[in-house]
Image (cartoon, helix red, strand yellow):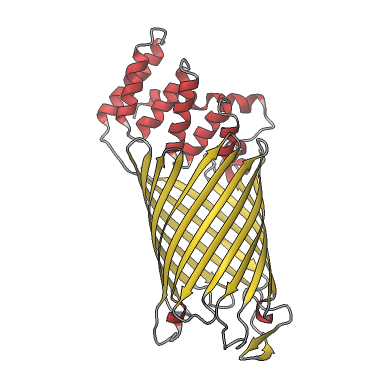
Length: 439
């Protein structure tokens, strides 16, 4: 490593952000974390805002967005040497020698380039020569948290339920806590100028305090391609997952789909997606009916994001799903979803407030509940989420501001044509998450 080059580039890359903080002590680094792509679209020529966004994306390993932002700034401000050097530092970091060499050769033609800048370019060249090319970027994501709910089993408001056309007591436990932890390992590499390929392995462990229904281990594999087609950003994906339950049959799932988005003007973004999944339960001696819920499901989604101002954005989502199971009674259904959220990128934290409706229509009556009536219900879910970097509170504990605390509250109100599914649930969760660059 070249210490002199590292010190110089670190200064150059943080120059605008540090000067902003020193002269405006009431602002915090949280504002960097809260900058969204929609804010960039709103003010694409704001040099300070764009540099903060580029640094933010680089911290979480999203170098594609970092490079895209810096390349755009380089076109807007072609004489800004600091932007070019910052871009070079990222290109060298992710082993992109062709782009880096092109910029170095262009900068050498600048007769007004200072001796220190020329020396820095030479150091970049030496590092590119000495470094073995690495196409892959490796990251690890770790999270842990707890959820408390006052109605873990969705007990009805009257504490009664229908069973084979009779009304009986609904005496399941209501209050419980669940602890969960997850670990993910991702490998990504660029493909051409506008595409990248991702492989992700994930493991989640869940443990419930009182009951054992939510005690499980899950494993997942995701393959995804991020690419551009015209003005469309497209992400086809393929997923495999397996869940090992302690008190139930193991379950398996295969899913494939594609998501995409495009911008309309400077304030609007349209997103869309389609998914197809095949879910199966392990039919064994401990659960002889698990395969009855084996199903094929289709899902369609449509979303719209809108910039109100630099702090407030809105998100509207629509969805449709259709599931067909081995045993249709009580399992085949269609669902329609509508959601709206307000997102606040405050300097001191990111807050999202959302409200969603889901309407579910089951196709065939379940005789184990009510023999002459197919289930129909809707749920109204209200949630509030707050995200904050630990480093904003304890800088020494999290100097890079890569450890986040997440607080959330969720209220679910369900109404149905059967008493079993009339219930109210409140949940509170606290979690911590961190992302690490491994190479």
